[in-house]
Length: 210
Image (cartoon, rainbow, N blue to C red; front, side):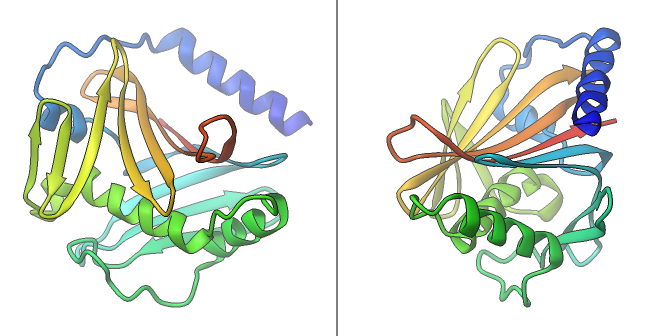
């Protein structure tokens, strides 16, 4: 409980000193490049009733593998790794520790759902390829509210102060929302899966960048 209170106080203090800006640039590619998925900060994983709070450090390595290292109080450091994001379907190695935590959380807390951890992680991989396309050298093309990389298509939704990317997968949608535009980057990145009927949040991974 104390950790949750401290986490909320941290988010509140950040909002006091960092005023969110409006999305004045009409270029979708530039808006997407402003979505932050590298750096350090705080994170929160919410799977139905279960919630984890942790520190984060994310990096895109020279081999184009993306690594999210998380530090969970009383549990230590865990990792989520997506090898070589230039490839659409790279052969991922055995599940890393944080991926295993996600899989266990879905299995234990979403027994009434057909959501599979492997499908969620594959959708997250697809989305990261969009967010990092400019660094991966991938041919991301955006027209109006649609972006595509070869045969993969993503719907884009823009509001006054946030932008969302919708990645369909296995009867669900992964909704990636970037908010709190401060300077050149969005300081909050949220990955959320809702139930097929859109009434319940099944899993939410939030990253709050420094």
